Image (tube, rainbow, N blue to C red):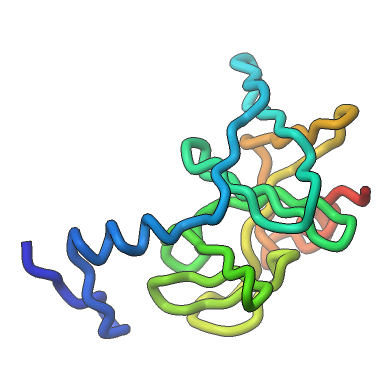
Length: 152
């Protein structure tokens, strides 16, 4: 299959490019601790150190950064491309159009027009519970988006 150009950005997309980009998705894959089938809640261990931890099966990023924990949607808010954590730069980046985000999910630059979507989270002992049924977009619910964070 020949690659084809992404409309408006000039990036070539094809199977090989997709696989190369997918393999660079995340430094660590995260395994959920418990899934509650009656709700849309998944529990994860609170990460021991700063960084991004990816649960690709559920499209969740757990981010620990400077004594805060966040749960983000893996999808870029611009065109739903899987985001990547760039530890050397200390930010998230979309491989499709290069939108950039701070570790707290706030928007820096690029084609996106808002921060990364955050899931509602709560602490349950040494676990963080992520409610996949409740997420907040920075532009639609700024107060909810700001509150969707845990202080450690």
